[in-house]
Image 1 (cartoon, rainbow, N blue to C red):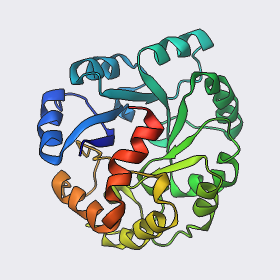
Image 2 (image 1 turned 180 degrees about the horizontal axis):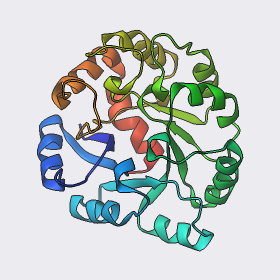
Image 3 (image 1 turned 90 degrees about the horizontal axis):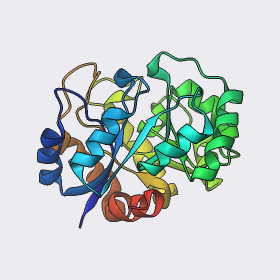
Image 4 (image 1 turned 180 degrees about the vertical axis):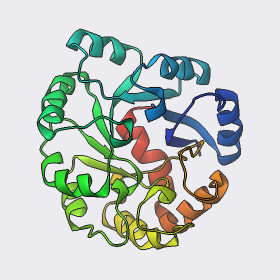
Length: 243
């Protein structure tokens, strides 16, 4: 089975070759390179990465509200599949500006990838399902064990949202190694396995506490997913990303 890594980063000194070494051990031969907040909004490094990694890879860039429609179209031609709304980039986002941007990228077939706080996820969840583009939530939407998942489940039920069951160590309100995320992971998988995705989050930058082991994170995912693992690792991302 050729697994698809839906979330990893490439930036110095963490090279394409270093990633491929990890990916090979885990059985990943396709994937999505996600632009990290430390890389700003310039997508040049993203395109270099997917060129080096090969034709089975695509990328998601940081949202840049300043770009014109023609600029966005050029990025789409280079295998960019969407924009990431990243609260750790230091930029403040208003919902109205995101909604307007979503209307602009809809003709490109793009999605919006949200890396936002749990508070923002819960505040925007009732509106996200009405966007004209698909929505992807990074890292469980950052919901911790103290956050009610009801609004997230309602959003998923609207049919326009996918959730990455990635980087449990990033979710707030939990001490390392974050074993308390298991109930939420299993709840999401049982509720809508067809809407779940997974990624390594390699190379695990900006982590508070011990550095996560990628292979151990993969084993943890299999514990959650059980018989749904293939669907989440291969079938869902193949259908969603088209790779």
